Image (cartoon, rainbow, N blue to C red; front, side, top):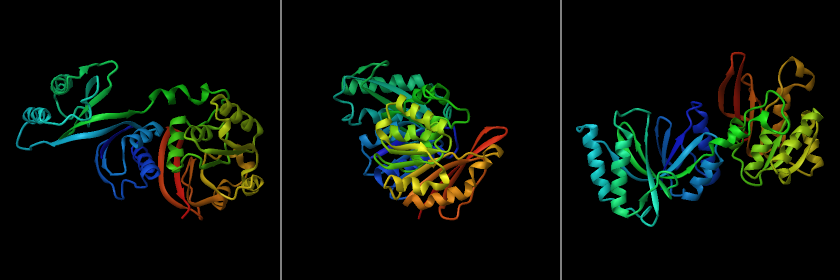
Length: 355
């Protein structure tokens, strides 16, 4: 199946890394393995016979930085010897001969045009939508419904080609706005925003019922995002007020059934914490350790991060944020992403793997 993913442009590399991680979770292939891929700006086209509509939908809904996904029905490369209008007219003629099995039994549809990059072709999108809509209507007898269509047809216009595609899923854009940290039951400044937290959970390649550990859980942001994708949750913090706040937040999202343990504990002694739970290792570690002069009494963060490899399963991932690059001895650094927050803070998202 040919699939198109429209990625957010909020970060240069994070959306691609997140898509790559989710492909590994759901089809056990990434963009560099047995997957044919093409990248057009923030639009990624892949072909893999393990992808189906349900997996495409799950990947999109779970993501933080994938805006939409499409099943690509037809691709036409532009004839370099013809102008855009001539190429579009040729595209319309081909659509008249296209089989419409994907939408022939549906009651209604709408046509939407995307130009990648935006404004790449100086052609009126509404004209394309109108012409394609008439062709589809005549071929299928389906009705045009711009407000609540059964299917949305996407015409994706690129510099050198055009795609006729069916929208599979759109990410819930409101979720991350409605669930910002200051709107939660318990708030403490300095929290990572839920969109980035969800992405970091996804970078850990966690699946339903995998164990997620956050030894510096704070108000529970990573635990919340892990709980929403079905992880089992283990959290701790040296500050008992944070532990109580994290529990309150998890309760407010009805995620307490995902909690294995959440208690006050020193991250330097995380091995004994897990031992008390009869757990030897966890599937993934996602955390945002404290830094700064005020936290110096909390121990040597780098030593703690190194020691966490002892409780991470083989091939498991540890994802953490830091205001600077940190090199660990016992894990392999696979990726690092810098995210500018403000003039005095840049977060570096580390993706470490135990190999």
